[in-house]
Amino acid sequence: MDQQQLFVKIGLTSWNTQIVRAEKVFNAFTDKQFYAEIAPGKNRIIYLYGHLAAYHDALKETLGLGKASRPELFEIFLKNADNKNVEYPSLTELKNFWQSIHAELNELFVNLPATEWFKRHNAMTDEDFENDPSRNRLSVLLSRANHIAYHIGQVNLVKPVLA
Amino acid sequence: MDQQQLFVKIGLTSWNTQIVRAEKVFNAFTDKQFYAEIAPGKNRIIYLYGHLAAYHDALKETLGLGKASRPELFEIFLKNADNKNVEYPSLTELKNFWQSIHAELNELFVNLPATEWFKRHNAMTDEDFENDPSRNRLSVLLSRANHIAYHIGQVNLVKPVLA
Image (cartoon, rainbow over all chains, first blue to last red; front, side):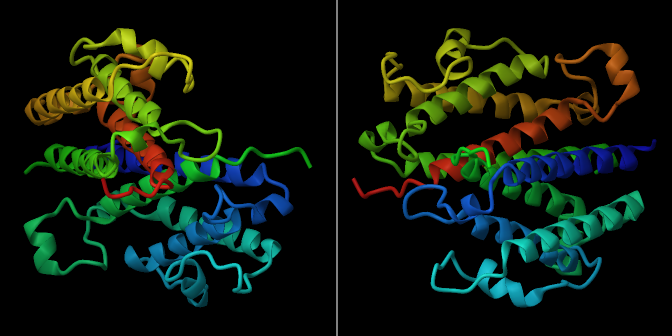
């Protein structure tokens, strides 16, 4: 394993650890609990679930690795806060979306050569990248891993009940 | 900048981003608000503040870079959950502790040669490390960055009021 491969492994471990943890936390809830708020007046669990899935759908484009599968979901899950007056996709649909997005990302990630992770992502210009080569695909991945952890901390405030 | 230095820069950026964010979030609270719960029946802000500071104090030892400054705080902030019947250090004392721990870590981190970040940390054996060299000091740092994000997500549920 060369140095780049080693660092990619460290970055992917950070990401995968958070994904596995998120799935464990979300999957412990009953369908009904997905509609509970994480705290009084705060986001519902289902919103954060859709928010993470949509953000990771968008991640394909940020990384320049593919097109978003469901960009129409960005409106409700990325551009807006939770809103009980908006009709959300069903939980079954969101669970399928989550599963398919993360399977697709996993496939893209394991097949991406290490050198590719050190190239710039689509949210910055060539000139910016030349000034700061640490702002590459891998740094985006680490930032997304932190973002998952941020929301797991919130979702974990709700204690799952046995179905 | 060689590859190792680049990786270290990416890792330190991930850590520093979370520390800066945490300080901004905590410092927006009045002294009184530090004693508010993040949600009904959940940890108080002051507990999470002490928890992060104590965990980062312990981080020096995990990384093999120094001794913990206040190991006596591990009992209340790491080994136990928040407990209103336990007397905590004053907020002033905790703020000084936070400041000194993070100044010390920053000093250690900026002076650590890049090659040192790729050595094993103290929580694993030489044999384990030989089997998986990705479990090094840098991977510990990334894991701690995720841990900060996890708790910021919770503390952010409390809206700061103007003093």
